[in-house]
Length: 121
Image (cartoon, rainbow, N blue to C red; front, side, top):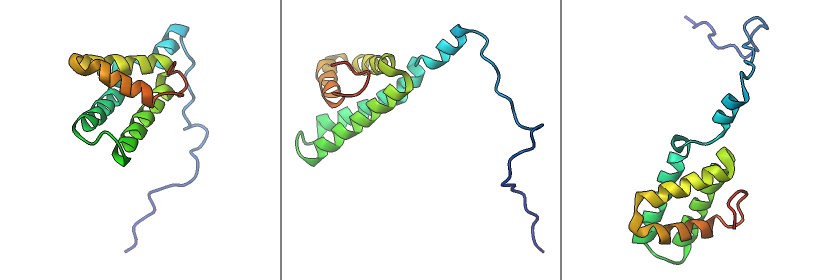
């Protein structure tokens, strides 16, 4: 016996299509576009893991290039999420994670983020 087709590849009828809700205020839209600490926490966690790999592994060669590339990708994703505010929030979280190593870690991140939009100089 053949099963009936349960997947429709056509668009839903216009009566079933959901209409986008209008924004109620500018404060609501500003709150949704600004990156919160929860939004940038995955980027900070990925950077911390990468930095721990740098601290325990080789400091030159292909491994270091891969680490820099990973840090740059995380920075680009954070910048796409919330611009310079998101990047600053990520840096703040990384600095708070280990105050003893914060200066060295932030220097590595800023070096990897050179040239990213919103990263400053």
